[in-house]
Image (cartoon, rainbow, N blue to C red; front, side):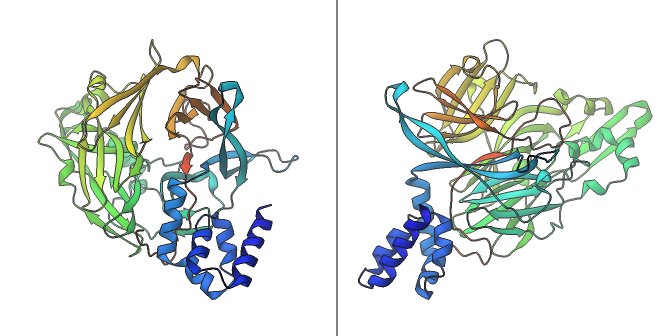
Length: 465
């Protein structure tokens, strides 16, 4: 059906010759990327139009704001061969449509309309972790899950809609802790321990609206020094400041940036888990950590090592980190236990913080941040009634401002409508980032809300519309 429509448009616009070029451009800007990739062969004019930065920006704007459906990119296990002993791990594109639900008084409801398995030009899909996404470009890291240390071996950018894929050059500035001799790791684990907490999740990805360029940000542990006698557990540890680097797509290179804004008088701010990019800013969940430990034993106590939870942002234009205060209602959760899970997402073009409390009341609460960094509680509900078998470990997105799209603890994909109180369990399951599994609970899962685009990765040039 789609091919017939594409053929009709091509014949109408190419043979008629009397249709104004701006009308042709308007029609093409509403088509899916697959159709546009085929239409580049119609004529030279069509090729130059579809690949022009102005058209790419226009198509992206329409995809973001006038989408008749919503997409999600997910890493899942599928069995393509009935005789295969083990299922294959693939990235799949889930396409959703909005329909009136007669069981919910005619309210709009999200339905899974199609699942498309994608081809990615690497044979190690199981080791690829989704770092972030922006404008249809997905940033992936090839993680060494045997080492589980700070520096991923390779990073790549991928636009699934137009099947462009690019490995980034090796980053030369951050220490590669995967090459630290095992003997040193064992002997000095107490004060080298922060590197085991950095497993690729500190990387971020976003767009710089001033330079019109896409950037990958990575933060790493530089080193620490112990003074005293390790065998007597006496002395103190000094942790060195974090290092940060930025990759820019236009230059295809890495460079080191300053991290003074992450340093306080007696502590550092550590971006720990990248959450989202929105309007020129990248956001991490992280923590505040002491610069110095008075004795070696303290480094084995996470509560002493980490002072408080934190939200850390990064302006992609001026390349400066900032800390954002948590909502007042969450300041009482001082520790880092598993009873409270936080996740940042987008809601009505604003940053939203979702907290999931797994103790006693099982409440989900969402705060929305305004332009000045102040939080307003937007909603609270007890989710245990709606997710009895798969507690939502990650909130992926809000759709149409009233529907939560999330991933459960067992990898199930669920949609919850805030207005109708109806929850849908989709017939597909995500796999954890950490695969093969090495612990009972896996968070987060490889699944993101996705926007189809024709933004190129090769020979990147972009304009605003």
